[in-house]
Image 1 (cartoon, rainbow, N blue to C red):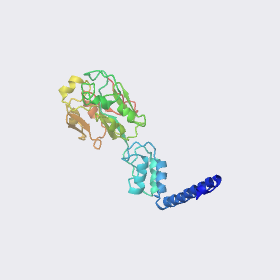
Image 2 (cartoon, one colour):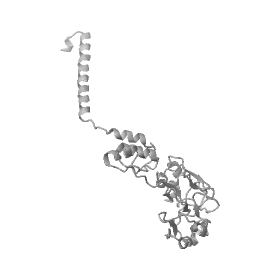
Image 3 (cartoon, one colour):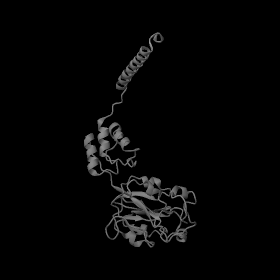
Amino acid sequence: MLQDLPMGLEILYTVLILASIALVLGALLAVAAKIFAVRKDPRIDKIIDCLAGANCGGCGYSGCAAYARAIVEDGAEVGQCPVCDAESSQAIADIMGVEVKHPVRRRAQVMCSGVHGAASYKYLYRGLADCHSVARLGNGPRECSHGCIGLGSCVSACAFDAIHVKDGVAIVDYDKCRACGMCVSACPQHIIELVPFESRYWIGCGSHDKGNVVRSYCDKGCISCGLCVRNCPNHAITMNENIARINYDLCTSCGLCMSKCPRHIIYDGYGPDGKPGVEIKQ
């Protein structure tokens, strides 16, 4: 018995016993780790290295790692990442030995023209800069319950610094936008849409109110007159719930709708100087 040994030997034997137990348990754990190890396909890490690392969710998965696993393990489509350039997508396709299908490049567009001075207000708000909180207070401080609240929840959601609030309305920098869709999800008014990147024209209003109601609170809102619809030679514009919308599959960018709109809220997204992005002015 250990208690019958001299004190020094008792301590030594105790240490040796504990060390032996630890050694045996360690060996068992090492064997178990090898037996039950989940082997990771090395292509997953290679694909992650090719992705942008933004973890924006624009591909439809929770992040870059999840998308990489889906490509390797579930056969997810290569080229779904809106942030990757053509070179990165091709590198992923080469890793998988498949042909990449490049999706149509898109950009975010804020469908609102209610800048300061154009849209009237029902109250002044000073507090937390969060559109979702203020949306519970009568859909924001403006009389228009459909327009941009202008407190920048979309700005906070954008990982690419591609959207900013100017003069009370969110404006997208097309060159920086990667169409990840985070701003679309962040907008409580649902007035941010993803449109084809090369599309020139867009309609700056999201109100579903009738024309006479829109006139009462906004100098820039759509009044549902239908002139754009009737003058489009390609039937690319329709009126739905008092708001005009462009079918970009049919639009040929002829510009007739822009010239006929009496409220001047159909904008050339590339502006007269040919540069992407246009600021709404009163």
